[in-house]
Length: 340
Ligand SMILES: [Zn+2]
Image (tube, rainbow, N blue to C red; front, side, top):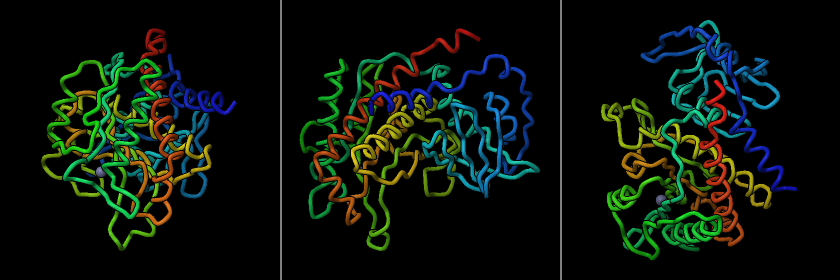
């Protein structure tokens, strides 16, 4: 029953919106603001055949019976069916509330209409990249090293995926050092694959007691900075991974949501830090749909015990495997596009 509910809800998210006639009827009223283009939320509502737009405190909520999009005025955090996304640009008031076309095209649309993602192809190979290794242990705490935890999860995920009929390529299977370029090069030898890099987080002493939770990174679209730093000229260069912008966010959505949900059901709940944008080398260089998953904070006094817990590790691996199956189904379901 639990599994049934879980599957239904993620399908609701990924297959939610069908908008045959209404899509063509919206004539977007585009406004420029600080060198970016914005569209009104009221038109987003119409475009996706959502039936209501309401304001509750600082939140603006667009919904129909299947989908709820929750924006915060002036904020970058957006909840889409309770999955947290960090937008590239804040929601702004330009007479009425507007969002950037970048976030409409690169987040909302691929999440609501994964079957429209042209670059997403069928695949049966999953490339798993356990971060760090060898002379680079990654984060270290009193219980272990990140490199070791990453490898543990990777091996568990490999077992899960093989049972579901996937081919699995691991960038490393032992505690060895690999450069980021070597990981990218290996990944790009394969065709028709997706790429998942596995990591755990850590922060310095000042923020140590607070920072915790799961976050999933996808490559910043062209013109969007790496999370947490200002824009720089090189952000405007198109990278290999940008060809997969839409597939990247759909894959991140599936994996992120699945892990948050399955951990909560296993009573191993962790905070949701959202799906974010970054310019890590493995994300810029890999040609496949790719994400970098951060499975918790080794620096957090409680979360470090969770990360060390075999049930937590197994649940993470299982949730990723389920998500990959759903992602493949969602992107391969071309029924929606043939109807219109
Ligand atoms: Zn790491």
